[in-house]
Image (cartoon, rainbow, N blue to C red; front, side, top):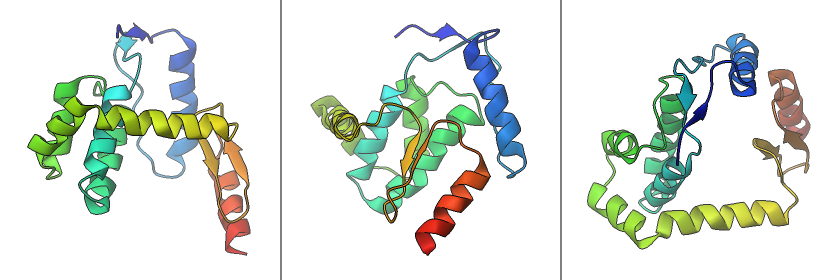
Length: 155
């Protein structure tokens, strides 16, 4: 997929808002430094599904590295070479990852998650549903709202 404009667009404004909101929580959110940005994250999502097939521990290491690559290191997570570096660095069996990608297992997992979300009425990213209470947090939500949701869930 072709990259999309970033500088001077609503995308850049959104990244600036996210950076400002996350700074107080000590989160490093680096504004995208490039004129264009990837148009999708399907390669990263597929890789994450393939990694999950190798175990929860590996997935729990890779998943945040993919977010960090995009939001902190400004790497193109639509580039399969970038994804392969990240996944391999966390110890994934790359022969198995490539086989699962080739078979479509990663894409199938992503599509299933998407279809389940749509069936539940989810239309925005991010959407967080707190299982204990059913509380739904949609879009750019500040840390205070997340804390309130966690406290409510904890009872």
